[in-house]
Length: 117
Image (cartoon, rainbow, N blue to C red; front, side, top):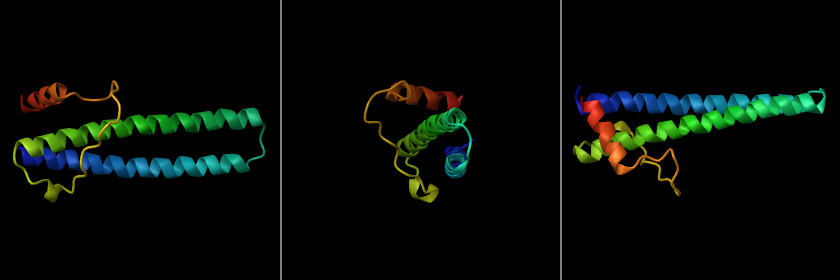
């Protein structure tokens, strides 16, 4: 598989992920609004709101994975002189602080090598 084909497929995943995340966010926001209007005991409302909050946490985690894919795609483009403009890519997100979800340059390079195998 050529880099351009790989990048096209990864960009489809990125776009689908962004669209799904937006839909999930909007739906959970609607659920939260409905919950606030319901006349149910406060402990049950709290339980449901905690579940909705957990959904937001999972959504944020999923977004971190999407950002990792974007970094890989940008890295491949930059290191193989591929024109990123035809893929409508956003610049890679930059993390302000280090976290377990941050890919080091060495990890990124290893990931690229694995994709080439």
